Amino acid sequence: MDKETLKNLKNKLEKEKENIEKELQGFAKKDLRIKGNWKTKFPHFDGGVGSQRMEEAADEVEEYLTLLPIESRLELKLKETNSALEKIKKGGYGKCEKCKKDIPLNRLKAYPEARACLKCK
Image (cartoon, rainbow, N blue to C red):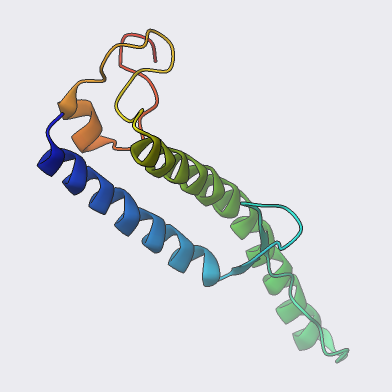
């Protein structure tokens, strides 16, 4: 792979990383104890009473539960993106982890964090 193509793919991965982190920051915060882990912010209740407050609390918990799988998906995508950036840094980017052959450039352009060629996927 030529240097210009590699540079373009690296830039695409870095932009993707930035976008994922920005999206995660909207509803989660980094877990400082576990590298790469984020925690969806659990709603805090002010202790109010009444049926309207109970309904609001239920809505907040429902939103929290909806965000958990989104957090998980984004964490995985971020992990894959970071792994691809690390491979670029170390010189192993673009090789299939299974068969060790080059991953086709069209696949990398469409999915730059690809770890395997289509045949091994």
